[in-house]
Image: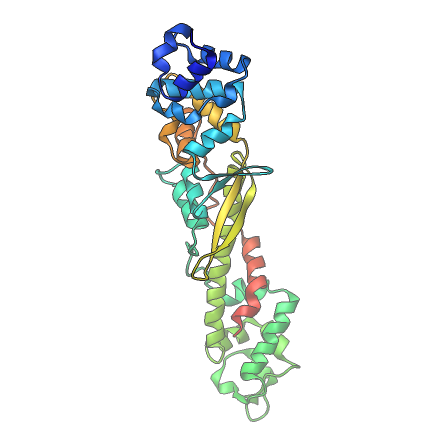
Length: 335
């Protein structure tokens, strides 16, 4: 009579059907007996790949229930994009835009595409020509520090030069001009000029034209940064149902001396994710071994039994964020 070890060997060789009738064709009964006899650790999980499709998920589910450490074997033989660390399991990504796979696609608002845009390596610029009045939208939102920087830059460009009031219409320039109709911009009047919209508008149309163009670019970038930041936060808020925290980077030097940055993100409950798939697809012909990566498996399960992630698109960036970005980057656009 064959011993339990003989049956384990047959099982590992893919010969389950030769003796399955002894256990009523119920692999869970066989595996439960193997565990009771102390031989469960000798089960070769790779042998399950040779089972008929409808037997794969029930077998793996039973193995996981009997011994949760089989999770590592399932990962080793199926999911090349998962790395085990001392504090849990991490999903390895080629780039962050891969996270778009967990979001809904299609429709008027394609969340998946927005995630690709925001998380992609290239800077996404959905907004352009955002500034219509450089004085109202840029100068008037500057903090005291940046106003001081602006005054210094104006003095560098046009300070202490004699300018003719005939070339300008501003009442302020008329007031500070001399009898010959000439005036200069200096430390004593530059702040008065900055505080006068008519005067600044005329300067922006002339001697400060290059600076004006820079500030238009600043406005566009401030809007794009504000939008990207807000959407980025919304994306990670949704991803928090699947992952813990945000990503970290692992650096590696290639043979040719280049540095490669690979993003990893910690999976919140890998055991639960795999068990949910095995349980929900138990009666279906969708073996988990069909997948070579976690992302494809999880997306398919979400699409069939839960729902893919979605987030609220703000549509337009928060003006407070825009103003903060303007002040944060202002000095970089002065030159």
